Image (cartoon, rainbow, N blue to C red; front, top):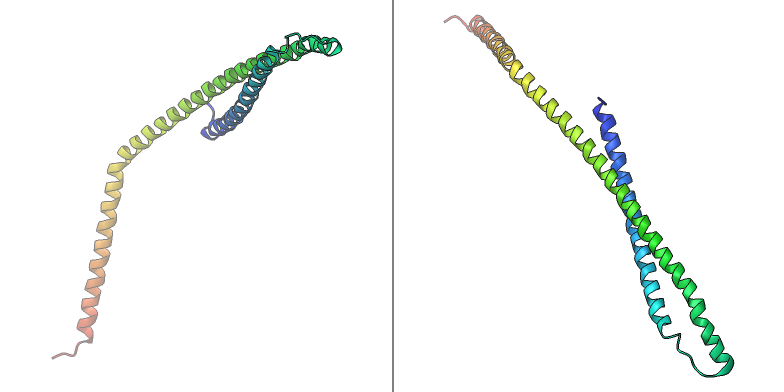
Length: 163
């Protein structure tokens, strides 16, 4: 069994790593969504580019444009798919980290409950002893007080004129 401080340190490290991973996940999710949106917009824009216009060289250049736009579109679709796979991997990583952090938390809570029970047991065991010690201390203090009062009374009697 590991000491509590080591477990707490591991938990803190896992929480920091979890937060970092969440930030990366959010950033990559935004990048993946952005790539998907850009790909979708490009596909919509290029949808009408395949229409032929009569007109020689200009028409021939437009005939090649749809062929050129297919390659970047495929690349963007591939990028979006890769980003989605990366996000799923990050999500799995975050899930594993969360499970480990939960496990550490349960261990710490178990240790805390054990220590609390031991503390309560010690308190119950020491209760009568503490009461006896307190009672003895109180009797000692009362005896000391009585002796001081008696001495004061004697000293007053010695200093008063006989009358």
